[in-house]
Length: 288
Image (cartoon, rainbow, N blue to C red):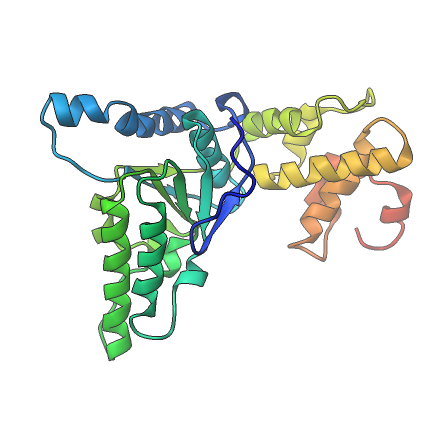
């Protein structure tokens, strides 16, 4: 399904144009089952509410929790693709204002704009807004709690799927848990998952050297799915520039660059057995 390119995004939201399938989703089986159950709230709403007399609720609302790069947005993309609806990521930083009352107005504009439109809304890093509430020491603290209550009320009343993401689930006030239809924890991928991610992320039609070993890559470095995606693409660009097949040398260089984003001082142990494939231009520079 192709959506109009000129479609106007809701205030404070950005369209995610990627599509994804269940086959591309790398998660423990029980997590995938939970995601599929989330869709049941939409698929069978008429049966449960109108035919069986179930209580009418908005949403459904999900909380996706886990470290950065573990697939939270990708999972939201899979759900949106399954529904055939666009996915919009809401930047809370663009909605929250230091001026009292403005945050509610901004959120109101967002939900007024999406009313009745088939779409999936994703609110990123909600822990910044929904952290555990402490003692109210000044008027701004009281208004901050009112902002959260207003946001959750509008999300609950909205008749469409909303996905909230967080890297720090422990910071989310437990009082909010009842407002979610489902809570899914996204773990760092284990070795088997990393092997599958490498096989999926390397461009499928790219020529590969015989030395490419996904099993070794999965064992060598404990990367997230986001890290693997970046490294696989970087390796492909290196190979394209060399006009050669993607080799372990390209991949080792790409993994090195990915790790260096967070760890400028790398050691041989950081790359494990992958270090032997690093080109001399890198290993001889004193960086490793």
